Image (cartoon, rainbow, N blue to C red):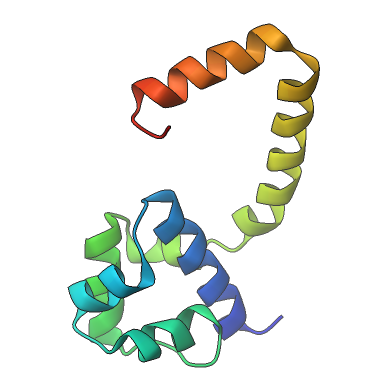
Length: 105
């Protein structure tokens, strides 16, 4: 996978974790939604000034946008969490309450 695709995947991961739409991101960094979509799909790369805007909107350091190792770990983490929640009723209830308290549910 090339760096544009890795970057786009990482950007999508962070954006969705922050509950932002592509349209809202494009608006916040002052580019067309189509251009933002191209970035997340790995078809183009943001200009340096837009990298700064993206990191500000997402509330992360620019370096975090390039931490691609977490993407590979994410699938493994997700699989383990789903398995635990599926097999452990108490863990599922605690997780539900926790996410609800954060406003994520």
